[in-house]
Image 1 (cartoon, rainbow, N blue to C red):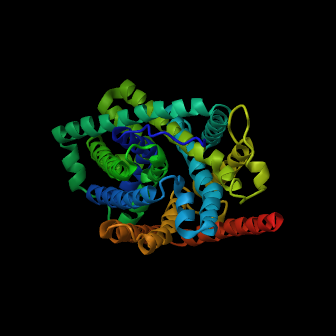
Image 2 (cartoon, rainbow, N blue to C red):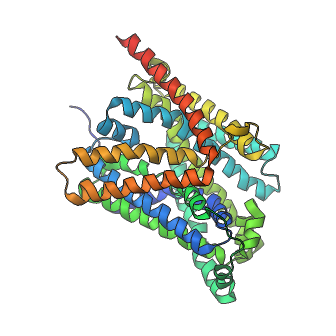
Image 3 (cartoon, one colour):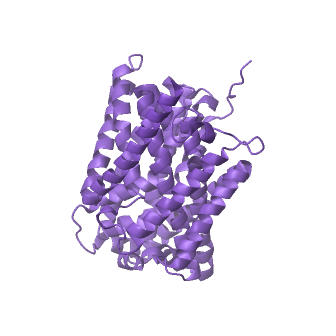
Amino acid sequence: MEAKLEKKYGLITAIAMVVGIVIGSGVFFKAEKILSATGGNLVQGIWAWVIGGLIMICCAYTFAIMATKYQYVNGVVDYAEATMGSRYGNFVGWFMASIYYPTLTSVLAWVSARYTAVILGFDITGGECMVIACFYLVASFAMNALSPILAGKFQVSTTIIKLIPLFLMAIVGTIVGLTNGMTVRNFTQVSESVPSGLFTAITAASFAYEGWIIATSINAELENPKKNLPIALIVGTFIIMITYILYYIGLAGTVENEVIMQSGEKGAKLAFQTIFGSAGGTVLFVFVIISCLGTLNGLMVGCTRGMYSLAVRGFGLKPKMFAQVDEVTNMSHNSAILGLLLCGIWLLYFYGANLTNSWFGFFSFDSSELPIVAVYAMYIPIFIRLMITGKELNIFNRYIMPLLSLVGCVFMVFAACLAHKMSVVAFLIIAAIIMIIGFLLNNHNQKLNK
């Protein structure tokens, strides 16, 4: 008899998994960017968190509909294949393996190193920071490739730790700020008016909200998935949005907006030390670093398996090689090694495009945001197809939520174009070259299989 996944997750566990998967480094990394993007306009910054959160909630609900429709389908690649066919599934899979996972994983290695450098007093654009980033990248790879069980335990531990600084800043920062008048001062004084600031802030928020799609993969192991998965995704993503907004407000109760905006990478540390003292603030800031490392580990999980997920479909680079699984570790080491190499390439690109005087000139873009927006663009035909084929669904699930999700995705693409301007063109050119390589590989594999 074929083994099947057991129904072992209840609603509360599913909600906790959604929250744990999404919350990570983005809220710390992008909160200061959102503040700077809006010129210190806290109300506009909150709107950015709200709009980005609502888009996430709508898309999460729509994917929950698909998760119950295709109950044993896991991940966005499989949803793309189930709705649009194998060609589109392979297209999305190649993008995820070659661009999405390695770009975000490399950025997370740098973000983790960035906050470590702040603790140690190093320059975040200097050689010391990049050495730490490379170390974190290799260490995360080694843990996932050699001991997936240890990587899983590390992920659970960091999920608990990452919530501590968020909730403490949200509660204590807000109380202190309301008591000493700092919150009112920061809400009523705007440093400067920034054109397209809201759109830049929304695009930045997309980085903090990314990861919810992974939660749909538990549907086959969830009790009563048709009822519980949509509830878990809606409640979980709503909790995330509220947590981010409360943290953002708590941050406003610490020091003046101008100080955080000028301090850059030191802003979060300064905020924690202002409220909790030098020692307490440093300890909580270490928790922030651990939170970032937890997110890095979660992304590395996907990165090490990217080429394997393509290879088992007969797609990608040398499918027979990258479909191999080690008998001892139960890991596809060939896929993991290539994933690490791609991370290294994209880390080098991120350094040259964003932390120096632009090694790549016109072809420099923010690899922490544009790949995420590109994935939102890939959701659009999936949502349209659901509206066409979902005849067994009610009007709300077949038309209203997919349409709202589609509008949200289009808005996200529009916001990215307005915020990043010609950088979007540079990204599209580079992405197109990589995607063409993927299609050539696919055609080559199909000829070999005939």
